[in-house]
Image (cartoon, rainbow, N blue to C red; front, top):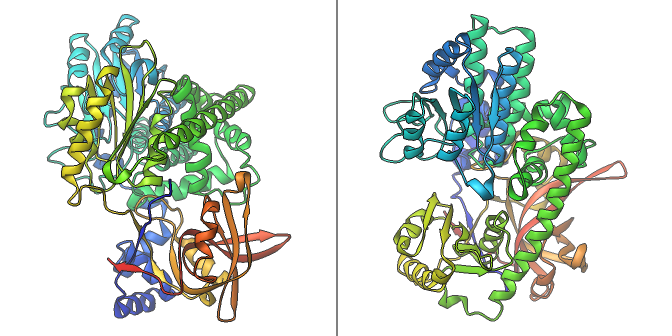
Length: 589
């Protein structure tokens, strides 16, 4: 089944705004255009964005609830109360848990951590775990990256006599949990300067505030300062993995954190970087975290126990750190094998289906692993541009586990809520959600979910996905000097995507080749005037005939990258999409 065609979109070209910003900042017009596309309209905004200095982090005391949390924790430490950090099992929760545990360890305060098992316990706080902690003598529980929507669990903690300090960044319900303290960047009635921080970012702010409190001033001791720089690196991992907007202070965290990971990584991260084959990488990028480090850290929670990752990040034993890193490598390989098999099975199930009749995809299988279904759902959304629900319905099990991913404009949690009569339970947000269902209810649920989706879309099926481009650029402008300027926009991520350009009226020279495993990658050369460049399209091998269908003429949507080979550097094009023919078809957004 062919992937759905994308609609290319370009921003309106405001020549005067581009020229003004370029002149006032002394940058090239292309850099000015990129900054304007990302909402930086003044030189001050552009400079802060490009420089991203560590001193630009907002003071921790501005975070709602931080000061009260520090006072309560200081009192708990003085009273020698037993403290437990309760973190979520994803990278954001794991790194945030490690940040707080490490700070307590530096302050020589005994503390323990608890990470729930994804498959057995599910996301967030759970009452059974709280009861177990209370029975073991825990008196104070600090959540990381969870808890703000755990109303019943907070009530249970109070009944158990636990002092519950919730640190989170997720969406809140109409009612807030009855906890001792809530630490959250968007609490009602507060005005923290930036609401897009992640769970690890919130945990870092609490660690920073505790460090200052223990030091008795804003200036902390040299060892604690070094630890906080390590903690910035861990926070950067959580931010990138959680796909929060890489703007404002998130950008500062990631810029400084990646620099720390390159030059002086914490012991556990050094082991993981080596096992992932990135130790020789001259410049660690956000993409390396998103595509190589984060999946290895997440693999433990998907297939086993995420608490191992906290141990790796906090251990002082280099041998143990390497053992865990190798275990994560093995788990990630197993996860990749499962993911490839499940994704292919899902595509095989759709083969021959007329997707115009199905505005959403709902698939179930008795052999699918519940820890991987979310990734498979993402792969199908990318391929077919439809909200997708993937269900692991183990034979003989009374409850099946589902995970969904959506497209812009389709609120997934609202859709599941409209079908809640068919579900045992569900939770999540607009773009991602999870649910439980009784296997016999799956066919009726599929019909109902698709009926809801059909009513939601004006034409009965989802609109074609959009590919947002930054500017139309002739190949002759793509010099190594320009690439050096473009690199100043790193790190890339949500709301600061990789720059992507359009080049039209290109002529393919020579014979394009299908290369790589399974011949899934297209490799070819294009010419525009006197300039010729190499182009690579990953996953586009099956589109070779389409590429050549207009007599060798094409238009490319691409990201320029630097290819280094045998001491030589050259610019090549990493193709995001192409259109056959000399004239590009696009919309102005």
